[in-house]
Image (cartoon, rainbow, N blue to C red; front, side, top):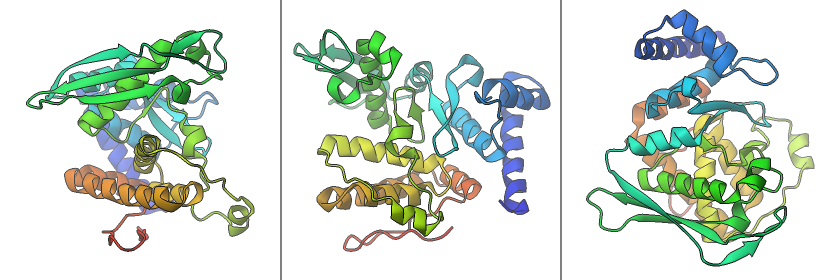
Length: 303
C-alpha cells in the first residue's frame, strides 16, 4: 500500500474511532487500544491493520453493533484477511432494529434425516418466516440439515437443531432486509471461497491449480451468490475474486446466472448506498464492476 492510501485509511479509521468513542463516552485513544489489543485481537496475538479495523468499525456503525457485547468478531480467513463475523446476538439486534420487522416464527419439519457425524435422526429442515409491516406475504426460508450440518464442528454435533434454526433465521433476515456485508458464525467461509487465489498472484501458481467444477441447484446457487457478495464487500479486490470464483467453480447456465446476479447485486448496492459503497471501495482498492451489457460477459475495470 502506498503512503497516500495508508494515510487515507488511517484518517478514516480515526474518524470512525472518534464517533464510536463519542457513542460510548470514552477516550478515543484508549478505545483504539482496547479494540486492537483486546476485542479484535487475533489468536496469534496480531492486531488488525488500519484497513481491516476500518471494515470492522464500518459494520459496527452501519448496523449499530456493540463489539464489547460480543455482537461482532474479527475472524482471520485462510487468505490472511480479517473479516467481520456477526454473532447470533448481533443478528438479533440487527433484525429487531429494522423498522419494517413485524415478527417471525419457526417450524421444524415432521420428516427426519440422518447425517454423518450424528448418531440419531434430525429434522430434515427448519423453516423461518418473517413478516414485514405493510406486506401481506411473509419472507419464508427453509434450511436443510443435510446441507448445513458440519460434522467437524463440536457445536453442530452438540446442538444441531439450534444451529439449524439460527442458520434459517440469519438467511431469512438477509433476504427480508437485504442485509449484505456480513458473515455469520455458522458459515464455513474459509472453505467456501475465501481461499480463492488472489488476482495478481503468479500465473504459474494459478495455472498449476485446475479448479473442480461444482453442480448446484438454484436455491444453493442463490445462497452462494449471497456469500460471494458478502465476501466481495469486505475483501481487497473482492468483486474480482468473486467473479474469478464463479469462473473457476461454475459452468454453463449456473455460471451465466451467477455472473449476471453478481453484477446486478453490485449495481443495487452502489445505487442504494453510494457513499458507504464508495468508502469501502476506496479504502480497499476494490475493483469496480461497470454497467454490464446483458449480451456480454461482465468486465471488471481497474480501480
